[in-house]
Image 1 (spheres, rainbow, N blue to C red):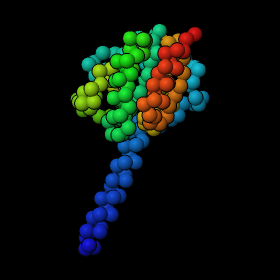
Image 2 (image 1 turned 90 degrees about the vertical axis):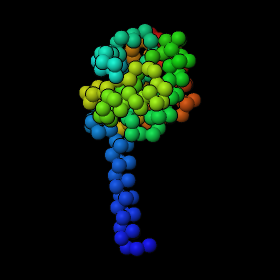
Image 3 (image 1 turned 135 degrees about the vertical axis):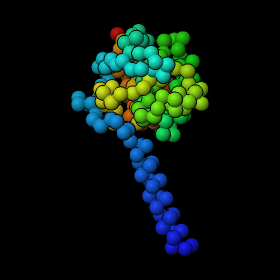
Image 4 (image 1 turned 60 degrees about the vertical axis):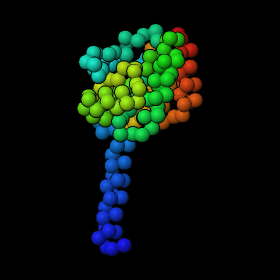
Length: 178
């Protein structure tokens, strides 16, 4: 291998490492929730714009269990989770589950819509804001927040999880009442 090829290879590896690091971290969310865990507390309400231009509030779903997913088009585990969330939305929606996806990567609306459509996602996708992410303690993606029917946070997950773990948390949120 020539010296120029080695230099090019090392440069390419360096750029790849920087991109992986950049896309693993949330570009807009910098502060954790000041009081630590929100589990057991009322979920902070928010008003965010959906991909179709509607304003969606968490409080619109009072009485339902809500899975709130902060995600990014650049983070591979989000693809798997979103397909599982769609399955859970279809399976548990009639039992009172609402899934809300909050896109936090700053991609444009068209790219986010195409990404969700390619995954077969039919639940509402909202355009994230730093203030909302900060109110939930989001620093690194993905983050899943399970809200019970009473509006209280049942569980916060600050990492990717498997299908069965997600389904167990959905059941827990559905069964959480006043």
